[in-house]
Amino acid sequence: MRVLHLSHHYGCLKDHQYVCNKLGIDLTSNFSIWNTILPKGVFKITREVANNIWNNNQDLFNSYDYITTSDTAPLSRIVLQNFDKFHGKLNIWVCNRYDYNMESDGEYNQLIREYSNHPRVNLIPYTEYERYYLDRRGITTPQPTIRPIGLSLQDPLIEGETHGIGFDGDYKFEESTGDVLISRYHNDNIFQNSKALCESFGLTAQHARYRGPQELNKLVENYQCFLFFPEQYSKLTAFELMQLEVPVILPSENLLLQLSRQPGYFFGSGISPETVKFCEWYNEYFEQFAVYFEDLSGIGDAVQMVKDNKEQIRGIMKTCAREHTEETLSKWSKIYGTV
Image 1: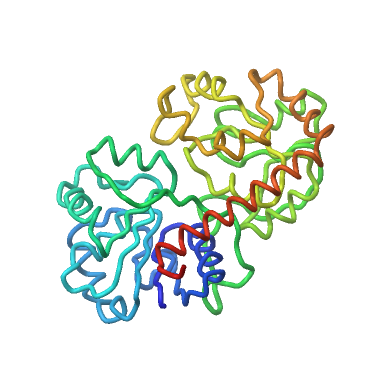
Image 2: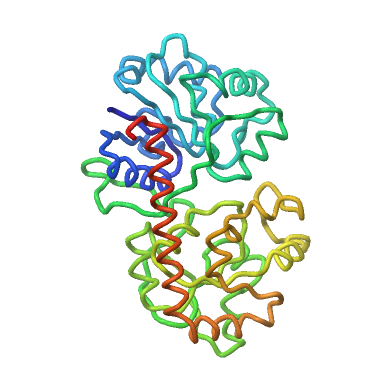
């Protein structure tokens, strides 16, 4: 079986590389940053853009049994708009909302509605929030939600690979030691200075700078826990940290909702009491091992709880990671018919 994976997101490509390797699938990955099949930096997939890509690659596309698209879903338009000329099956792994940068494109939205239940199309939510977002727009899918597995191979995606991890910031690897690793994103750097906040409790803290899971793996070995203030419903980092058995400290759901109402706090797509349950940092795994604080003054106690119970926490994480790995591989196996 031959699969072509098209994506703007390097993490999705690496995650699926691991899955396909375990399932014995012949996978070809294409990252938009490479500017080969996909034009670099083009997120608005108009009719013209989709047709140009299809016309330039029709024979290539039809040489695969499956084409899988991920972050962002509008990449699927390349195939959907030319479906009568496509011989294979299409997996649309919906990450970051199905209509990202395409909200006002009625033709694209109609294509998703038309093919969401087609026998040769699998519309697969990346997280339950994506299903909720689809449902609210009258789009249903019979496919299960398949979350990232959080594992990756050291093998490159292509020979001589050069990738753009960190192209949106300076994430050059910095190996260091301390108590708390802190997210490198907006809420821990711009909304507030989480490093200084941790230091106010007498903790040694550092913003996590790394490129990819191998560097993350090296970095987390030197810290007690990882502090994260959520800014998306799903974050690949959450599943990577679980697989690496790195204890995580987080604001509780109630505190997250309070923070999200403050000026400057970022949460993609917005969050509410109705939707906070979809945030993966509070999923059925994290509720077993994450240490949540109800107030910012509880960060010091949360770190101490990790220190006092680290081996027990890591043991729970190991069990959860194994269950998640087995479930994820099983779901993809059914999608690809390798059961």
